Image (spheres, one colour):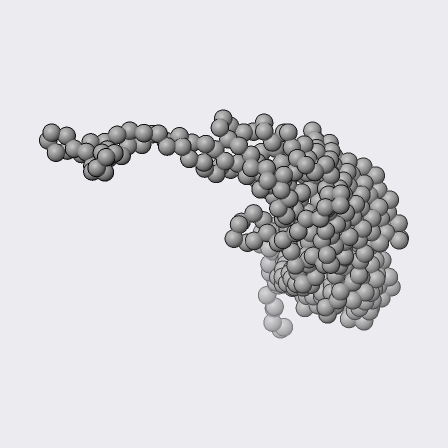
Length: 474
């Protein structure tokens, strides 16, 4: 194929760079499948109720203010009822004060004590090759309010309308509610209604509880469906949350992690205790604090085990140029002494086979999981390239070396994909070792090919030897 080893290395290097094209195409396919998976999961989750985050209870107390306005009006004769005029026939005005009662922004009050107990049961919903765990949660809330704190945020001449107080519990979606929701205080039950969309107060339920100063403790019981994750906002001055489930693989996240947790094959149990000082959330305010609570004071559990093999497949495509280059380099070193070295087309077929490895791994991972899929895809690729090396590349006894390098490369790639923390370390070490080994094995290589006369140092042309003129025979 080439007369010089240097030209061989250059051409094979160019072929390795050319492999960026199929690897980029493979990456696009992986991302497309990942988006399709995410969309399917989102559709199933939404149909079941979606991710759930409970924030509240939140006591909303209307506020009014007595306002005095200075006004003027036309003076009227109290006897005749006629408008009074001066000597020049101009209207006479009189000034007076008018008092009005106007609404002001309400007082928002979070509970003093907030205890929640959550029990969830999970099941699996499938669509095509995708499976999504969903859950049903039974929620019990017990709480009370320090109503005396509401007065502290009032301005002069403002009054709390206690008998119009409203209790809200915010949810991600009312569609998730199942069964009967019961709000009670002792023997008294309160009616619950969905929060109207027109009020722009969020999604959830509310109740007109009347004067909360006459109630010592509230209790709320409700059931809801959900998927992906379940969470609660730490809205109490002292918040205690207990959660148990039959889901064996939870992932805890949010602003507060559990104080204690137990995870087994039969499920998990976790508890949180969040004091008032640990959260950036006002206990009483004149602006709705719900947005802050849902974004800065959450305790969350993820029930969905993400299909991380899409991320692994994408990363394997990104690292693909490394193990394709190492395979090319191995073949180049093994057949450098051959009279008939590998053709560029054969290198391309080797590179395409390793690019297809990523698609093969992803296709099987969607069916049987990442670990077994990687074993099947890697085994098939190593077997194919080993047979190709023995039959097409004619490596003979050196075929075993090619197989050993492929096993090493794919074993290192597996470690890289399984541990993102050590991916850079493993990849950099492998690349360095491969380069060092290549430099050692080619230390005596004649990169410019056979010595020739004439021409420059890099490109030399041979000139025919000068021959003495023939002398005719006598």
